[in-house]
Length: 432
Image 1 (cartoon, rainbow, N blue to C red):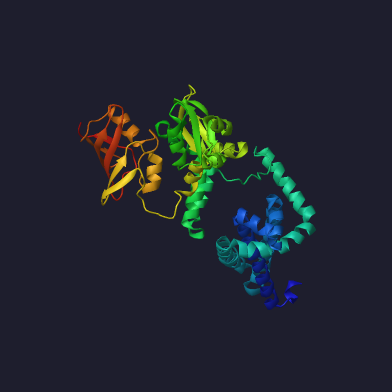
Image 2 (cartoon, one colour):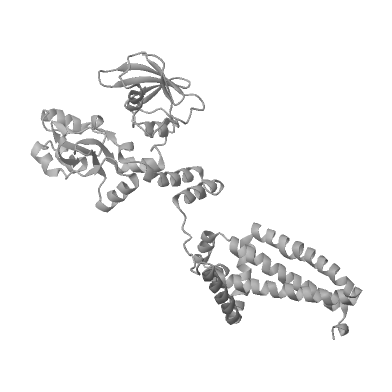
C-alpha cells in the first residue's frame, strides 16, 4: 500500500516528524533550564504561559514522561518512514544508508541545534510550549500515568525512591553568588547592601559597638551643673544615666523627653530620674542579624553589651546595625573621619582605639577583622606588649609607626596604606 503513496508526500511527512522531534527536544531542554524564580515572578505578575508552566513543573516526572513519549513516538515513526523511502529508492540495500543519514539529520536538526537554542533562550520556547503541553497532558494523562507509575516502580527497585524534591530554596552561599552574579542588573550600591545583609550573621555586637571607655553618659555622682552642660552639648538623642561607673547604670534618658524642662530651667536630678527608661542588655557575642530582630521585636534602639560576668563592655544602637548594611551616613563621601586624619598621600594618623571594621568601611581598607576589634588590640595581641613610641611594624602589608602610647594602650599611630594592601593578616615587629 505504501507504494501507492507519492514519494514527495513521504518526504513531506518525514519533515513534519523531524520538526515534531525538534519541538519535543527543544521544549524539554527549555522547560528544565528555566529560572524558577524568574518564572515564579512572571506567574505572579499574571503571565498566562508562566502560570501554566509553573503548574507543569510541579510534577516534572509527568511532563518529562509526556515529552519523551511524544519524542520517541515521532523518532520511531521517522525511522520506519525512512525504511520505506529507502526501499522505494534503492531497495533493501539502501536501508543502512537511509538509517545513517537519518541519524545524522536527527542529531543535527532535531537534537543538538534545537536544544542549544532552547538552552540559550529557555523562556521564549518554554512558555509558549506550555500552552500546548498543558491540554496535551490532560488528553494523554492515562498513558502518561502508566509510564510514570512503571518508572517510579523501577526507581524503588533501584533504591532511589520516587519522592519528588520540591525544595528549590537557595542556601546562603548560593544566594550570595546569585547577588554577586547579578551585578549588571542592579546598582553597585544595592548589591553591596544585599551582601551586607547576608554578612550580618557573621558580625557580632562587639564588632560594631561603642567601647566602654568611649560611652558618653550622665554620671549622677558628678556636680549637677556639669551634667547640665553635658546634656546641653550632647550630640546624641539618648544618654545612659549611671552613678560613678557605667556598670552602676540607672537607666537611659531620651533627651527629647526632657527638652521642655531644660528650656524652662526646671530640670533636676529627680526629674531626670523620672524620665529614664530601663536599660536593655545583650550578650557581647550576639550576631547582628538576631540583634536587629530583637531591636524590632522589643521596640528598642539602644542596648548595652555585657560579658559573661555581667560587666558592660560597650553600647550598640540600631544605627550601628543599619550602618553595617547601608554604609556611613551623610552626603560627604570623603574618607577622612574623626578617628583618621590625612598626613600625606597614602599616609594617615589613626586613633588606635578605632574599631577595625569601621576603619575598613570608612577608608576602604582591608585590615584583618577575625581577631581583635581595635587597631590597638591587633598590635598588642601580636607584640604581646605595649610598644614604645617610634616602634615600626607591618599590619596586613601596611607599615605602621607608633606615635603615642600610655601605660595601658596605644593612642596614635601613623599608618601607610599601599594601593593594594595585603588581605591576609601579617603583623611583624620591626623595632621596639
